[in-house]
Amino acid sequence: MQSPVHIITIEREYGSRGGEFAHDLAERLGWKLLDSELVEDAARAAGVSPELASRFDERLDPWYYRYGKIFWHDAAFPMAGLSDEQVFDSERMFELIRSEILKAAESGNCVLVGRGAACALACHPGCFHVFVYATARAKREWFQKAFPNQAAHADQLLAAFDKRRAAAIRQFYQQDWCSRSLYHMLLNSAMGKEAMIEAVTGAAGLASVSSPAGERSIGIAGETC
Image (cartoon, rainbow, N blue to C red; front, side, top):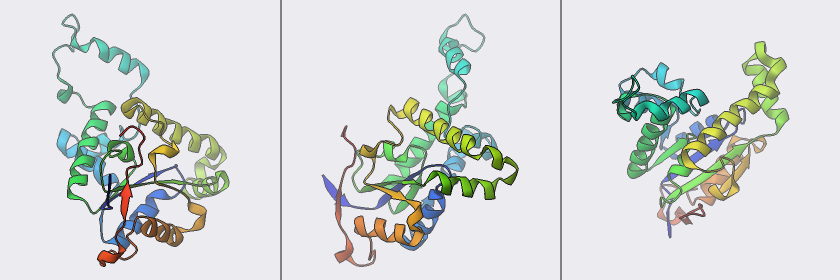
């Protein structure tokens, strides 16, 4: 099934500046950007502060917490009787964000950043999925400028961030976060944001958004649909 593109998801390696690219892409298209906004919407839905919600963003709960959660439905334990809606953790966070992603997809004309959006919308028509990566050197240089006090540990911290992100996606969606089969396009940010925007809008048939002649039908990228 092929449909005109009205949703773009941007997954990104930490330090690849994929979030900045998503911002510029949304601005160019005149579309809504949903990045940290997804966290804020999830917090609002759960009735918690955005600061608390951000602690659970794109990460798993500790293993001992996940293990203990198995017993919560057992009446012999103090926390028995709590519904999933009464507990706010990483799993609940992913569920709420997935709901916000699906809601945004129904409205269309939006750029969604990370948080498993490509997985949540893998079988949704009208989506164009992009993965942004960068060389180790480029990510290291970005990190050293952004966090000079931690510059000596740049490589380890960059790798750890992506490892957490990948583990969360694997747990919640049973998908390999950086699998090529999830995406229509993989972009090296070394090409520059302007070239990246041209590549995505051209491939997605959005080079001239205001002109119907610019539209192009895009098939679903996922293998399981």
